[in-house]
Image 1 (tube, chains in turn orange, green):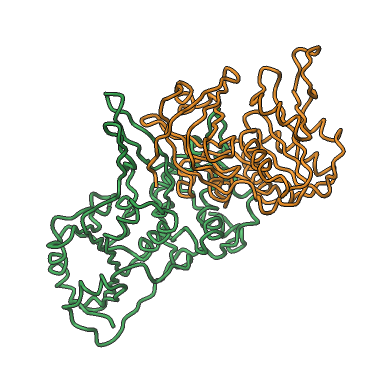
Image 2: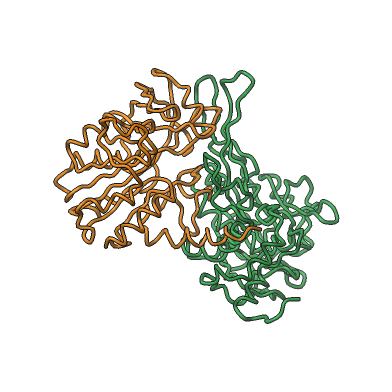
Length: 272
Length: 318
């Protein structure tokens, strides 16, 4: 259950100083939103989601943030990386079929959403209209540029930057947070489902905006981040009240997960 | 059908078991400490009190190798052990093992469980911290269970493995079943809607986040996975370590964010996990009412009393 398997890195792409993509030859093809426990023997494990959906390779968008990811960062093409999985439930594809979808992601949170977009590309007729919003801090933080260019032509795709460093550049994008620009689009919010992945504060603000525009709270889904050590509901590290992010999630319906997060946060406000 | 064993024959009975099995039983170490240990002599066994340390370390030790990295290979720990018997488990201990069974799906744990025979014994003197009666414990999970009455032990058989051990003993003429009588009672366990109640604040203020409650809890299983590298920087081991939800680092993710940042949220997580969350998922309480967390707490936090006040069963706090 804990035995990782070795895979080969076939390509690495640098996006920013902090973020690299590792393409790994593997046939396991996790469902969009699922995660795998990536590891380096002797260093440790960390949960990451693939940002590709296919049977040839896994794409790991890795931010140099912790012990393991900083070790992963040093790996080169041709070297071995280990993982076990996939774990978790991923996006509720069945529930989304036939619906209009709003896909929203920020920063490295685009990884699971990118995988979902690729899934939808392959099964386009199963879904209704699609609106995609990707947010980044500024031009220097844009990830998956090639895919974004492709999706811009294929879908109703909006790229937004919190702050545009070079206002006169010819990059087609909005400026501002996603929650501030989303109502510029004519979307039938009442009949859409929204799938969000990003920092928790961003998911919170965007969800509030979406609900004010008429989207039902049981049609908003969050892809969550927690400390997932085992991946199958045993170690207890990723618990949010009675839910295990690794096993019940990492994708949760907003109306289910939000009250539980609020409960825990209410207790954090009392500084003891 | 129960079997009987004269009390004076107990040491002999254990001796026979020791020929075939590794026998683990409660041993008194000093004035304050008693724990389960592999015994060398049946006379070491001490059954007069609930052990300070729970039995879980024989299933989920403090440190345990999951996989070993050696010469480019990865070797998985299968949890292979010699057949063993744990004798002298109380009903709470056995129920705690049942709780662990539902959250430890790995083969290491399962193999250890398969190769362990559990022999329970009726607890005659629950102390002032015991509240097992309130926790709706199962009367199952054991291979054998001993009830002491007059000059005999009456032995209930719980499994085929257990039956084989006591085959040679006499059948009991009548069935004996005894009941517990606790002084401490947790009256109402329906606390889900009291999560935001201010009453928890005063307990959390006393809490030192020392994590003694979770260390001594027989059903706490949370762990950390850690790698250790050998001096050659190639080989090493991946281990799981006991860890406590009472520590800030428990929920910390890369980047430094800890999701249960305050002592209050961590303390409530412990209590609610034991009483509410596990019940939601698995249909039974995680807490088995052994009272070890209350005994071990250096600042004497009594969350059972707090719940009783909360739910209106005891108006005043001492």
